[in-house]
Image 1 (cartoon, helix red, strand yellow):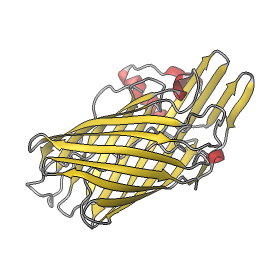
Image 2 (cartoon, one colour; image 1 turned 60 degrees about the horizontal axis):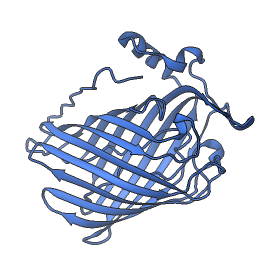
Image 3 (cartoon, helix red, strand yellow; image 1 turned 90 degrees about the vertical axis):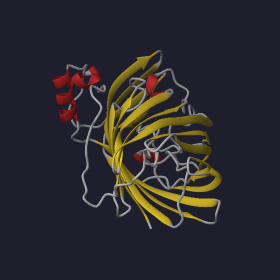
Image 4 (cartoon, one colour; image 1 turned 60 degrees about the vertical axis):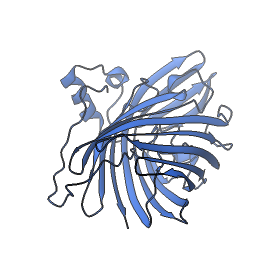
Length: 322
């Protein structure tokens, strides 16, 4: 599914503050590739943490349908993924902050295929492998040198790998904020269910944002992740993955902002197949900040590097500070 048009939406609330400003906050996203979801690649982390507590939930609903073959490798991925990531965040001191993420993940059959087929028909877009695959079923199969390494034909869900993070405020002003984060992903999920990797992963990252003026903001992140020895394709898993993100936000009206960001990472597995290699993902949408302090995110992600990540992922996020 290619981007035929950017999603535009308007959320109206009589309680919205008239003097709201763009916060320049990124979508809390990462690559939803079902074969990478259990790895500890970090989500977009905040570059500014307010005093008190912040709670939130981010829901990602994605669909992937592809067949790839090169050399001795062959891959089929026909699956729907749904992830709800609950976040609790707070401050320890003037400079130190903490965060805990509790994800719950589902990988299996679904009901997005008919919607995506209709989208393709309406805009005259290519169906790719979707036209040859059954609708709303799960089938993940990977063969290498004649050996079936993966064969998943049933849906599974459960608590995924928990992530804990410690942040340090490097710089903070009205216009610019920088924070470093050390994140640790713990093996609380199950590699057989694609909810975890079976290993502890550690990331070190720098997140920043800059307000250009009262309407425009830019934000970004750079990270390196050390992957512990996991249970999913262990002979091919790499030890280090580099990732980055860059985006822009514009205040459109009152509490409503539109934003776009690009996330990318290097390959986590040694393979000649695109779905195992580096990925570049574009996310577009916006957020609305209510006078009560709640923030609503809505967006959609697309694979700029075609068939390197899921075809499409729909995003909904809700956050509140206390």
